[in-house]
Length: 322
Image (cartoon, rainbow, N blue to C red):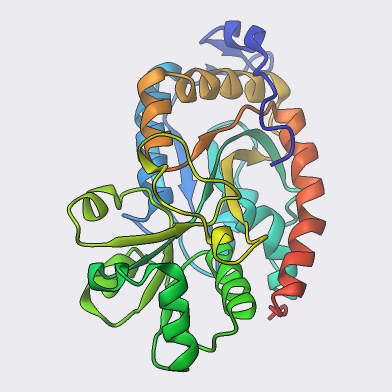
């Protein structure tokens, strides 16, 4: 990720909790804030958003209501957020799927990722994991791919967001395998791997730690460029089997374009406070994710550069706009 070590502007944290916007308006925030999550309940993005919303609500002094709007690879929820009143009372959980890849996945979408949104912050980036049944774990990734190579069409792979779909295409192309791919919209990938209807799942680690640690799921590899530090350091990367293989996702929070800058600065300051709380940060990194520090201006600039990169990733993976 570009500029992952940049420092949050600490001065933003001094923005008063009651901010007048504009003259003659109510003090902000004076009512609950809606956080649109364009993913299904129970999914890793939903779990992260709910954990964030609870802390964030305490910081801003108002309840944060999660509104799940999954569908069409996140574009339904994003379109709803784009149409919301730009007053700071509607935020949206955004990602590389919705803000960088979507314009190249669909011939037409109901929002413009650049013009219709203003950034609060990118908050973390995360590699994906390749999961399988414990009995297949003894093969390792190389052995599992060899089995798939010898038995085309017999070992379905499942994924959800577009990052997983691109990873699937990259994996099949580089490994020389031909297996069916199942696109999921909910949180059923681990269940279907355990049940045997999927031979491999591409998923975020978030929420799966208990299944992995109890031995119900095996993690073949992370899609990061290097092994993760700490408790996951013994898990190899895909690149150790397929050199050069790497892809991670990034996520954060946005508001509709036109939201007053003082409001954005306030939301950013409170977001920074939440993600830098030691226990919140530790819980995020427990899932294999890395906390990222980007200001609103840096995030807006970053999204502009990510669009062309994802256009190339999708083209190279052979994924055409629908």
